Length: 288
Image (cartoon, rainbow, N blue to C red; front, side, top):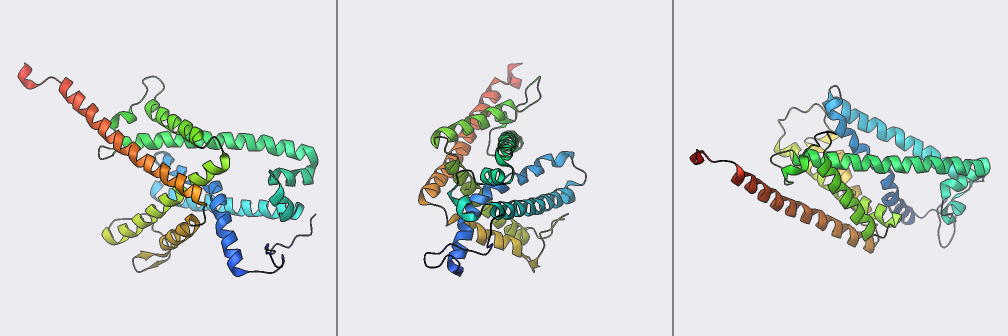
């Protein structure tokens, strides 16, 4: 076991001294990277149609899963620091594997590598599947900006094959654009997600004031009159984490957001052209 000081913070003057400003900066800088590990919980919403009383069950499932995951991550972090120490973890290219090697030798490293391989593959598959279903659900709405043909279902497999192809092409373009660098892709992903979460929190606050008479099965707790405190904190924390990213990550993230807007705009134009072509093909009453 490593003699660990869990409250030790690196400092240029004294490694053991606690600098509040430095601590806050380190926490928010680390949060920008750690946030990537908390992506995917929102995919629970995709199974709402197969859930009993989804208006109540889905929000509870989201909160319970996040709380359980936070506890597990904290226990893993404490275990890793207790085994190796943050100095060696910081210098290691595979910190968790180093901790496993310290605990169980090469066997522990091999087992952890296999688990990580399957976990990563499962996460990528889940994101691709949920992303295609998300595009399918949006395009299936008549008021959507996406063209309706993206909601087309395969006749035999009963899957939204056009949406799957779109997600596949987007994933390939992202890998090519960032040269497959995982840290850059993770940083840009977190940046875009934080921007999305900021917009969602703003929308929640707006709905509280604009449509306050809606029958809500679940309401965000801790409110000051109509103002939801958690949404306000979500906006503040999201913006603070966004400001901690490197300039290159911010630029790449902005380019991705512009690309998404451009994709939606082009999709809307294509959708209108397809609808006009269908209308022209339909026989008119005067033709009979």
